[in-house]
Every structure is written in structure tokens, then in C-alpha cells.
Amino acid sequence: MRTQVGIIGAGPAGLLLSHLLRRSGIDSVIVESRSRADIEGTIRAGVLEQWLVDVIDELGLGARMHAEGHFHTGITLQFSGERHHLDIEELTGGKKVTVYAQHEVIKDLVTARLAQGGAIHFEVTDVAPQGIDSARPSIRFRTKEGVLETLDCDFIAGCDGFHGPCRQAIPAAIRTEYQKIYPFGWLGVLVEAPPSWHELIYANHDKGFSLLSTRSETVQRLYVQCPPQDDLADWSDDRVWSELHERLATKTPWTLTEGKIFQKNIVGLRSFVCETMQHGRLFLAGDSAHIVPPTGAKGLNLAAADVLILSRALDAFYKSDTSDLLNSYSQTCLKRIWKAERFSWYMTTMLHKNPDESSFEQRIHLADLDYVVHSHAACLAIAENYVGLPL
Ligand code: FAD
Ligand code: DHB
Image (cartoon, rainbow, N blue to C red):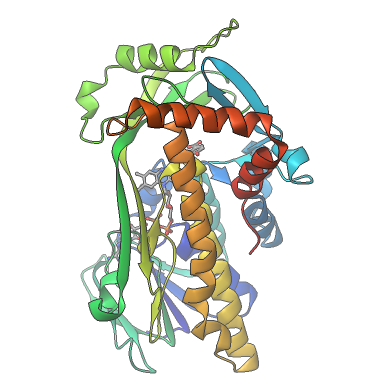
């Protein structure tokens, strides 16, 4: 087997990369360890930055996103029982908040790639990037049928998420990892109910953070801060509703519409960056190189930004025979990644109740929120980060 770019992982990074490369006339093959049904059914992120919506449109893949996604003009910050609208559209000169679930993006990208005749090998095992120091790297893997294959390629894109093998393939001596683990997690639920509010609510509360998001006219996505070691068994539906009602309560009357909870999951929160993101002919993209806590809605968007930068560099390599952009890939990505790390850390710190912090620090977060909602400059800073910094 041979291709120009071998892609490990069919998450948002790997799939979007295959589409961007196709637009440049560059051939790619994806190997993915999970099944198609599994990647299309895993519930994760929900918010797309404006430039990503535009890229999806440019690729001709935006029809369902426009029909089924939700386009909001802003977000609501809640604290001390009061809500404050941040008019993202006005603050950013017309950019919107797009709520369209990650697994729906995955479905659109997989369907289109397969319809184009693109190669995605699902349910592969024993995946190993090889020869990344050489001009002839390859990916060894075992197919679903058990056949051992070698995919020869010019470059390998490591889009294999946080637990994949690619990051470890970069020698430890040239890799520096930066990490912060937060002492809290998020319990996420999907609920059969109509929207309770016209936009996302990010709520600071003495009992902990909560987030109200949406999926459709009949399904809502809600999150509550919980201890990271909590088990789903600790969270009966009654307890979820009681915490949500308390944390989202306002001084003025408002109703949180309940409904049947049909999905629950708990994730721990961490910040992580791996420097460098490249070695020889291997390029890391997305969660394989960095993780953000979800409060800034950046994880999926950062993964997409990496592969846009990588696709431009590969385009320059194949069309103009120049490796400059490839050589500076990691540096280019990391400049923007660290700003998204900062924003995600800032939103997380300001909005959560950290059990390790003093009452002084908790009051500082309230002062920060009060400053944000009363300062045009501070609102603008949140808005321009939320919609995504320039690429
Ligand atoms: P992934 O989506 O992780 O894709 C990597 C792919 O590589 C996977 O399909 C995996 O199966 C595959 N793979 C792994 N190992 C191998 C191997 N050895 N061989 C072949 N394939 C392999 N972000 C938010 O902004 N908001 C959220 O609410 C949110 N919730 C999240 C919940 C969970 C449980 C997780 C894990 C992440 C969440 N994120 C969230 C983050 C966001 O979903 C990720 O940042 C995004 O998925 C990154 O895309 P990616 O393509 O880099 O990696
Ligand atoms: C969603 C997830 C986020 O992390 C976020 O900041 C906003 C919305 C969501 O799943 O809808």
C-alpha cells in the first residue's frame, strides 16, 4: 500500500486533514482503531469557531450543519444568580457561535470522504508509525480481517488523540510536556427536552460550575462540575436535576425544562501541551499534541486549526517544492495553541469552584466576572478568543 500522507486516527483532525489534502490534490489514507459506528456515536464537543464553519462550507460539507446546527449571536455568563449576555456577534464584527455536535461533524466528514472514494480503514490494530527519521516512513497496522499491512507514505499525520502511539514516537529527549490536572471534572448529560434558554449559559455557582448547551429543538446538552473521581452511579437523575436547578437558578423567574436523561458521561479536566509537535516526517495534530479543559470550547477547534496549518505546509511542499512551512509547522501551531490554552485555563479558573482554593481566590473570580461583564475591553477579549484567534 502506498499514499502521500498516511493519517493515523479518524477524529476531527484526521478526517478534516484528508478533505483539505484532497482539495490540494494530495492523496491520503486513514487508519482508525475504532469502528465507524463508534466514532460516529461518541458524544463530545459542541461549539465550532467561525473560521471552521467557513472551512467546512468551502469544502462543500456544510449542508447538514446549516440545516441542523444552531447559530447564536452570543453567550450568557451567569454568576451571583444574575445573567449577562455577551454579544459575540456585535463584539467581533459579525462572527457567530455555532453549536453543532462533534459526532455530527464526524458523520458528515466520513460520509463525504467515503463517497469521494477516500480510503478509511476502520477497526485496525497494532498501529505503529515507522521510519519517521527517514524519507520513506510507513505505518504498520493489522486490518480488521487480521492481515498485517504496511502503508508506505511521504509523511505521517499523527491525529490519534491523547492516548494514541504517535506522540510517544517522538524521542523523549526532544519532547517537553507541560501539564495541569484540575481537581474537578464534568458530568455531561443529554436530555429529551426543548431549549430552556436562547443561547449557552456558562454559570459560576458556589456549589460548582454548570453549562447549559443545546443540540436540537428536542435534545439539550447540560454539564455540571463534579469531583473527577466520581462514578456515574453517584449521579442519579434526581441528583443531576437538583444540582442543575440550584446552580442555574436566577433571581428573576426562569424555568429549566426537565426531560428524560438518555446519556451520561464524566470527564476529568486537564491542560496539556507537547513541544515539539513534529519529528522527521511525523507531524502531530489535535489531542495527540495538546489538551484543553472544555470550558472555552476549544478542543475540536484546535485540532482543526492544526490540520489547516499542516495542509497548507503540505500543499507548499508538493506544489512549490518548499519545506519551509513544514519545518516551521510546530512553531506556527504552538503560538496559537498556547493562547487557546491560556483562554481555556482562564475560563475554567474563573468559572469553577476549586476545592483547593481559598475564599479569597473565589471572591477574585467573582470580581473577574463582574469586571468582564461591565468592561467593553474585557468582553471583547473574551469574544475574540471564544470565536477563535486568527490563523
Ligand atoms: P480524537 O477525537 O481523540 O480522535 C483521535 C482518533 O484516533 C480516535 O478516533 C481514536 O480512536 C483514534 N486512535 C487512537 N489511537 C489509535 C491508534 N493506535 N490507531 C489508529 N487510530 C487511533 N472538547 C470540547 O471543546 N468540549 C467538550 O465538551 C469536550 N468533551 C470531550 C469529551 C471527551 C470524553 C473527550 C475525550 C474529549 C472531549 N473534548 C471536548 C475534546 C474534543 O472532543 C477533542 O479535542 C477532539 O476530539 C480532538 O480531535 P482529534 O481528532 O485530535 O482527536
Ligand atoms: C459544549 C461543550 C463545551 O465544552 C462548551 O464550552 C460549550 C458547549 C457542548 O457540548 O455543547
